[in-house]
Image 1 (tube, rainbow, N blue to C red):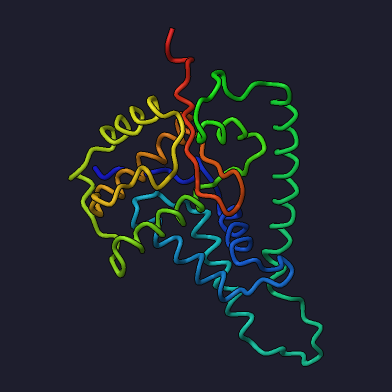
Image 2 (cartoon, rainbow, N blue to C red; image 1 turned 90 degrees about the vertical axis):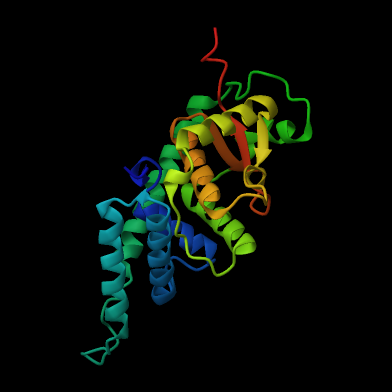
Length: 241
């Protein structure tokens, strides 16, 4: 049976829309619906190619976006220009979702206030960056997909994501990544994907990375928006006596 990553354990369709709005640096009140819809559908195709199980909510949002896109192409039947902007169908719930996320973030920050994030004193530059994780930017699954897509584009341009997972074991890759992180504790995202890797191994390594994030054994963040993504081990000292 093919290995699947359950996307609902990470993010939802609203998170993907917000990611696209921020990525394109557009006003949430003036969303270029055709561009966002096309990019949203491209993400779904990418996730399908990666064997990421896309929940029904994502497909429902895709239908909503395509409906809004088609409405935007229709002329104003009344001719008075007072017809409600079809984009409000997603703008309103997006704004509400943003408020909920901000509230949840504030509550989370209060819970961890005063707690040590890491138990050991780092000794190298990467670990020093990791120690500052509290002031860094959390990376979501869509940013990870972007970073992985850039690697594919650089190494294998014009290549379709067709591969056989059977060539590599997810569990073996998880063990390999775990071993690396136990030694280095922190590393850059690209370090997991050496140039010697072929397409199938690249994909399985990425899926193993997602599984480690899901298990809470790996934290993914950026010191700032323009920095390379950092992976920080959470293979904790909880698992050892």
